Every structure is written in C-alpha cells, then in structure tokens.
Length: 382
Image (cartoon, rainbow, N blue to C red; front, side, top):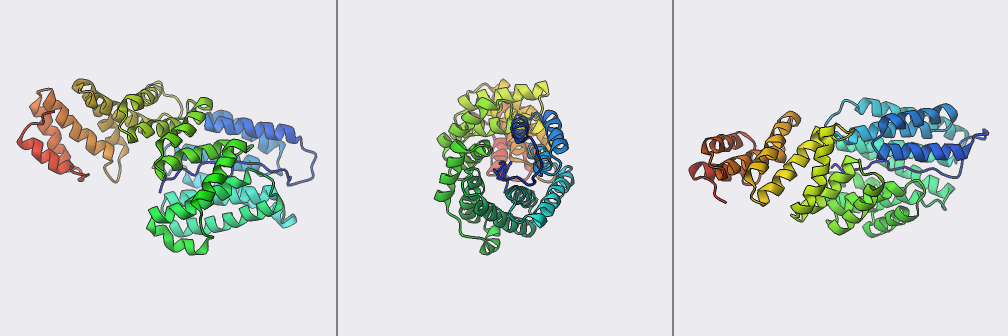
C-alpha cells in the first residue's frame, strides 16, 4: 500500500512553543528554504539548513522534524531499501520526545501537537509500507487525535486542513481498496472522500507551508484511486515547474500518459529521466533508470522499431535482475518476453528462443507463460 504520504504535516502554526526571543521571520525563511531543498532533492543543502534551525531554535521541534523528512525522502526514492528505517524511527522518536516535554509544560502548544502528530503520522506511514498494520493503526489513531487538538487551538490555520483532507479521503478509499485495513478502521472516525478532496484543494491553493504537499497528494490520489489522468497531470505539471529534477514527480507525470497508452508523450518524460540517471543526478537511481528504459522500450516497440526497443528492454532486464530480490517484477517478466518477440522480428530465432525459455523460469504474470510457449512453437510475427 505504497501511497505516497510524503511530508504529511508540512506546516507551521502561529503559536510558538516557548517565549524565547527567537527571530521567527528567519525561522520561517529557513523552513521554507529547507523544505524546497527537500522537494528539489538537494538533501545535503537541506541537512545544512535544518542543522541551522536546530542550532538557532533549540527548543522548537521543527528542526528535528524536518531532518527526519530528509531521511523520509531518501527512503521514498528507494522504498525497497530498508537500511534507513531505523534512522528514520530514531529521528522521529527524538522529535516526539521533545514535543512531549513541551506538552508537559503546555498541553495546548499547537506546534508541539502538530509536530508530534506529524511524527506519529510518518512513523505509521512507514510501518504501513512495511505491512506492520497494527502498529501503523495505533500511530495513526494517536496522530489524528493530536491534529484535532491542534485544530481546536488554532482553527484559522488553512494548513491544518491538510491533515484532515488526507484522513477524510483515505479513510473512505483505503478500506475499499485494501480489505486488510478494514478491521482497524472501527477505531477511527468515518471517512468522507468528497470532503477530503475539497480540503486538500483548499490547502493546495491557499496553504502557506502545506501547499506543495497538498498538490503532491492530489497528483498521486488522482492517479492511483480516482484514475483521473487529466487532474493528476494538472497537479504534476504545477509541481514540476518548481521542481523539475524531482524523479518522483516526473515519474508520476509520465505514467499518467502510460495509463492512456500515450507512449509518444510518456517517452518525452522518461527520456529526460533516463538521461538524468546517466548523468548520476541525485535521486535518479537505478530504479528510475529501469522504469525509464522500460517505457522507452515500449515506445519503440509500439512504433515497430525493434532494434531500439530491444536495446532499452535489455537495459531494463539487467537492472531488474539487480533490483528484484524476493519476487520478479513486471518490468523483468515483460522485458524478457518482449525481448524474445523483438528478436523474432529481427530474424534472430536462437536469441528469441532463449528469452522465451527464460520467461518460463520466471513467475507467471498475466499470460506470460502461455505466450512464451506459443512463440516457442511458432515465431512471433507482428
């Protein structure tokens, strides 16, 4: 259930956690700069920015929270890699502890409520990705309660609606899509998809610090759940104008065209992703290169340019064999099958047979085994 819950509580509030004579204008400026650096995949710069926040505002939880968000985005760009999970949990726990100390002195501290709620929300998010459903539900329940408490303390803050919007939308949609979650939902308020969409859209246009995150959610949920590609592209296009080198934004924008079998447009996006991966740009790792090469191969295959298609599917296959650990991906299975078909087109029957036999060693996906057996008996013809 890899819904991208990135920077869910990306907002500040008008209330402050201490009476110290901090320069709040500078604080907000640093936060904005650091958040933009995170979305821009400039992690080293973001680390330095939030190190300054921690140093200059030592009693405020924002610095610790957003340092954890840098780790979150590193995880998000490579979700199957669990090597940074413990660091992320530790960073969130440190933020939660600081917020608890503040709440002990002032139970209505809006900042402390927000950042503790945000920390619990992100911890629950990763636990859900790792399929630790019960622990994820506990964090989600506690985090939601804190959002409501923060709203009571400051109901005029538009950014608060980000938390509400996310909850209202997914609380209705997720149990329908993932039945395993339903038993946990008895502990939560009822969802309302239409209300959630309105709240997210309000923040996307009128929010101060949560504006970008709301746009990101609207892009992903329109793609994944609403299957509204035009709406998903609208938000993706807006995000990419500010963050053209965010591979996650680019990928989502590109696959909206794939969903419509418009590989002519999709190939423009994935060509850029592929070239950036060749340059070694931060974030454009082998997973994005694998996906980009696959869709470039699809574009050439659809245009009946067999040699170029085979070139890119070969790259996708090799990368998939590096990436796939426990289960063969669709990228691998399809790439191997398509390579057999393409080599048949190119008149290289020996290579084609080798790939068809390789398909039979992989798990069956759709009709992969049936097709491989069919083309072993008689060469594929376009």
